[in-house]
Image (cartoon, rainbow, N blue to C red; front, top):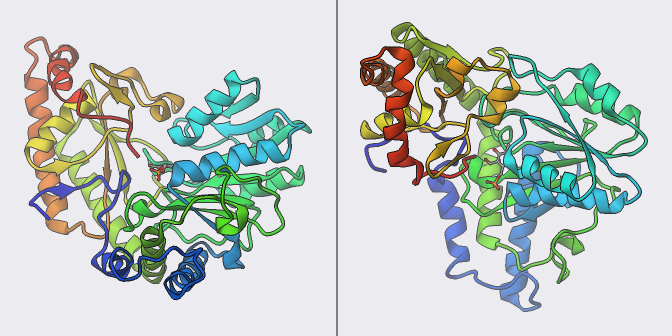
Length: 408
Ligand code: PLP
């Protein structure tokens, strides 16, 4: 580790030493293909079974066979949605929300172009769903409902159990993108109305490139990747054995410390928010402050540009994020904050701080102290006052925008 302060754990997390240790032998000594009959193969296949049980444990699946390993959260989301559309080929309607991650958003926009009808459920100014709108949107033509458990930008948690009950009254399959929730919140698919649930290892201290899709037993889900017989014909392709073992170990560790981690990280997050709101009068927290992931703070700084703030934070070695999809030269405001109808003066200046297992009170203190300096500096860039500072900030934004892509 360098001396950076890493407050971007919703984008990705550092692999835990215990996780790295568990996966390492699968690159060197235990390199067999789990489909092979010989000893190298069967030894490795056994380790995949262990990992499947560990992942099932994290999300409360009744049977490890309900876990299908994928390459990432995006693949899990694509498999669930495309698979359900194929299984229910006579249905042409999908229900989702306006605040999903691009893994769902982009796919549903694509499907809309292909002729599917998509209902995009809105949220209120706190980022909460209107359950009556959901109820009204369901019809005999609805192939599936896909709604995230927790928002990656604001951390707002949706009432998945309640949503599922509504969806199930119509007998419609229910998919949950729980990529941000897994490892941070207790999940229990066994006693829930959830049929499909996506998770991704790199959000809870396993490496990038490994994910899992929970498929309720008895549900027919055609495969997305077609080829060999791996994963009981549900996901072809030679398994990422090291990644699977790592994800299993990370799941086990996360489950064992769920409450402890959540309590600790929430106290630090609250401390960070209090510190910033106290020292920066033109700041506010975005999203429902009650029902939120314990590690996430989405804070807007009035009239400023989030990307400019990130550049100055970076100069202090502090890594944070905005929620917006920023492409070279243009910073689009976040679709999540737009759906929440955040006023224009707060929209561009949103910064997401996402804390994690390694966050310390000293780091929180440090960031709380740096933020007012950064805000003053950006406000001072404008001789024309706060409104004019936006234009000046654009120079700073240009300098970094080419370094940034869509983030987790
Ligand atoms: N869904 C949510 C809510 C996410 O936050 C992310 C990643 O940030 C994804 C899906 C995609 O996961 P992956 O990066 O593993 O493809």
